Length: 187
Image (cartoon, rainbow, N blue to C red; front, side, top):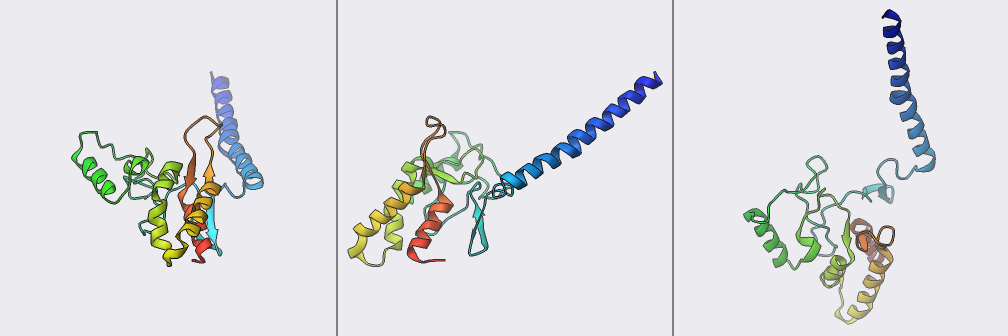
């Protein structure tokens, strides 16, 4: 009996050390070497200033920016998640009506399951294009040229379906807005 208890304690110590110390250190070292950019959350820096993460959505409320999907937790990471509003919810109906009144439709009416999606479907970006152009364009005469530049930015930032058949073509909102700022010379 004492021998079995001793063997069990030795095995517990070995497995705890292996799975609680050695394995995490190996995985962390692997990430450090091969995935140095992604290991801390795919952070995006502009002029050495942290502007966001490629993996977490942000709130863009100014008209000159493309907007992401609504967030039930106001883009905070701790209360992330869906609103859990049912289809008969008065609060959901009011939020949808307010979004529609602002000119948004489709995927931009509903929060995602996480409430922090950094991407929007291609259709959602295209539906916002005219609003963004109106907000950014100074001279009316160059509208067609500017529209073509914005359309090109949208095309170049469009990511294809995952494995060519899962989901829809999508665009990272933060990266698209930063590209617009670079094109306009904004910081």
